[in-house]
Amino acid sequence: MNPAALLRRVTGLVATLFAASFVIFAAVYAAPGDPAVFLAGGRDKLTPERLAEVRAQYHLDEPLIEQYGRWLWDTAHLDLGRSFKYSDQVADLIASRLPTTLELVAYATLLYVVLGVGAGILAAVKRSTWVDSAVVGGTTLFASVPSFVAAIALVSFFGVKLDWFPVTGAGEGLAGTVHHLTLPALSLALGALAIISRVTRQAMADAAASDHVEAARASGVPERDIVRRHVLRNALGPIVTMCGLVMAGMLAGTVVVETAFGISGIGSLLVNAINTHDFPVAQAVLLLMVTGYVVVTTLVDLAHPLLDPRVKEVRTA
Image 1 (tube, one colour):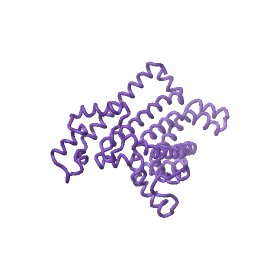
Image 2: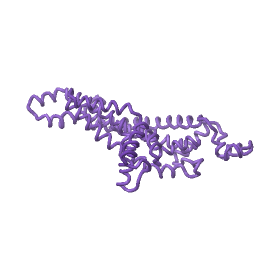
Image 3: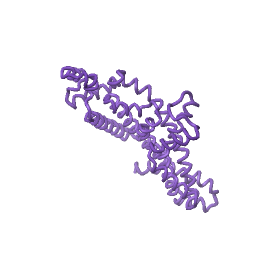
Image 4: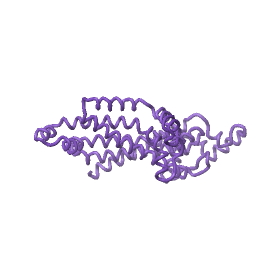
């Protein structure tokens, strides 16, 4: 990539994060409830003098733009402020919970990539058969089930009835973490699995209809080699792109799953922060989610031409 194109992407990334930061700050600022009441110790201990003191101490009496400018400056210097509820540094709270969330997202990503791509390849190879119909029907069902409904169903069947998996916590050690996070990761991955399998099936169908695949088939190349070397290879671009986009959005999806399974990650931290009007924590977690999404989608966009040379040819034409 030439320096000018790289500069444009970096500029766009920074501009997107800047706009997102303002939207996040303004949305939390406009949320119902007054954090000064919570910081003052509740309405029972509230007096006008105490309320004014708390507002001045936390700069809540300043206009929105001034508060945003102060927050943005501190955030740019990696100072995310102090939690209203826990009185701890927000960065420390996020650092203690982020690894659990990343483990959950990584596990869910592994599940939907392996199962979703595998199901899509199977449906494409067995196109117009009962196998294809079963894959399409099953993935349609998975896509229609919300994460919290899937979580309840998995807990009821595999956690309570069969007692195969624990239903709360994140576990310790590799084996314990895998055991505890299987149900949460599966409930998080079901909807993504349906999307990936559909994209894989369609991408392989489009690749299989190309002229060079027909030529290879006519020349007597074994069907297995055709699928592996020509069809799947040419379909990797849209498949990897969609996998990356889905993974980027999974940080936000952990909010429901972590709450349902009692996992102490940044998703449950966000829910608690919103419920207690802990503005610094809510703003920091939301900004982290948006930053993760923007960075991952940018990396996927940069990697796409490496997987599909035709995209590079179009962009450089």
